[in-house]
Image 1 (cartoon, rainbow, N blue to C red):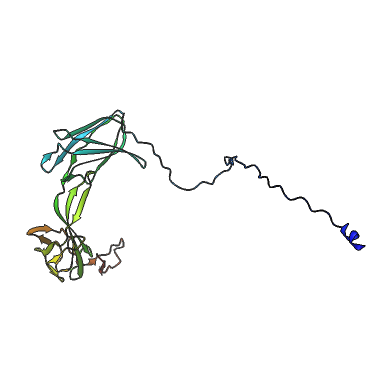
Image 2 (image 1 turned 90 degrees about the horizontal axis):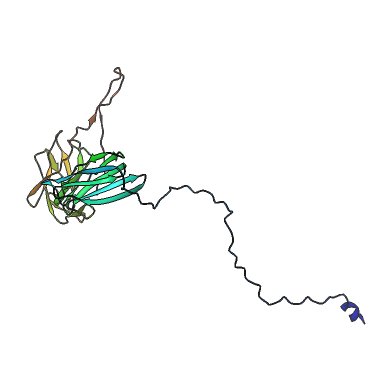
Length: 271
């Protein structure tokens, strides 16, 4: 008799949720009203910098070690901030070149002839809006073997050990006028010269995979002490700076202060 009374205290369970799928929402959220914080940086532009049309004129001539150069390329750049507009023009048969109707501004101009002539220091200048400017471009020869040297300390100090590295390479000029150097590997280098030097390492020696030969040397006298290397019978002057005594005289604006020479020794490592 108690069961009906207890059953009256419970309610029926709610029906199960519908299994019909809800419609999908395809509307794209609108973020246009959201403000983004600024990020530090440098503005860039893809706008091409024009060189023409304008009212100014650029002209000049190109020459090499043997005279006028009719087969060179003149590379003209107009510089605006970090952007560059560029143009290449050939020289005429008489070695001259001309570019009329250009816009004024800051310019950088260089020239070359592949594979052996180039101007490694371009002419940089400002061109007025109505100016006619002549720019002559002397080219230097870059072919065959070239030798460069580095010594540490620089300059060498009398009686002190120094490290000398000599690099041998074959130079040429590429299609963009850039001087390229290819190391000469396994060449025999002999140090020699009329200067007062003592070589404390193997001499002659062979160039390594970078075209370099290293020597331990000591300079014994101050001033100009010529030193060079001989490769396959050809002598190359290394054009080293004058050897130094190592004494530096301090300077002062007070004549009552006595000064005492000091010795400065610089150490460095070389490859």
